[in-house]
Amino acid sequence: MFGVAQDAGAMRRQVPPMPGERLRWLRRGLSLLTVAALLAGVGWGMEQLYQRLNVAIGVIAVKGEFSQVDQGAIQRLVEPLVTGGFLNLDLQKIRRELELHPWILQARVSRRWPDGLLIAVTEEVPIARWGNTAFLNVRGERREIGDNGVLSYLPMLQGGDQSERQLMKSYREMAQLLQSSGLRIAALKRDDRGAWWLRLDNNLELVIGRDQVMEKMRRFLEVWEQQLKEQAQRVARVDVRYDNGVAVQWVLEHTRVNGQIGQKLTGVAAAPGQV
Image (cartoon, rainbow, N blue to C red; front, side, top):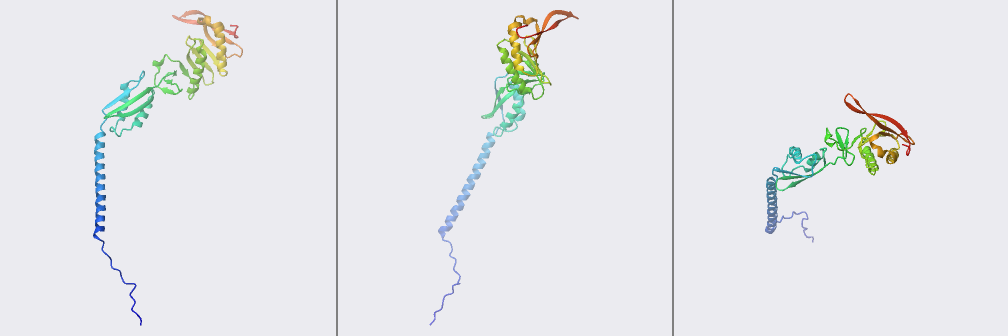
């Protein structure tokens, strides 16, 4: 006898979800809606807070020790750059623009609660004039200011383009060498052929030439200390381009021409110790 087999392909009945499972899904949905509402509320609140804090700048304060620029000039320079509110100010842009000013070495820019902008400025220190329109700072960098007449107390350096650092280096070396003798450089020049010339603060001119510059400076100092120092008022020019000596131009007499006093000079060749 054979039994009747059950159909294996019979469809299964779908069991409806239990009430507890539907409740769990409902709770999850409500939690997500709550979180979304909280985030939206926080975002709205942050936006409102940002708007309240991002007020227009009311005070621009400038600090520093100034001799060539003043607080008012810096404030007027900054005002067109203050285009945003307290929070979205571009501090780096303001700093970069300030440091383009020839007299500003460094600028530090920060916010000051609740509506202030604080600017701390370090001014450039000029070491020498460069021609008639610029000065050199401590790093030998050229700063154009249009007219450097206000710096007439500084030595004047002259040379070709891109030679500023070399001239500043040489100026420092020469000034240090002359320091022990009490002489100071009033002007230093290097021409297109590489020849050096300088004028001291006592109006004595020194012609050096193109090579062995520091060696020739030492030779001049030897002659100066041994023979020329005691009669400095009579010395107009010293040429040290010679291998074993110097040439000295002496002031012989004063002559009046057309109402003006001029100096009559004569040249004398000399070796160290024989002037």
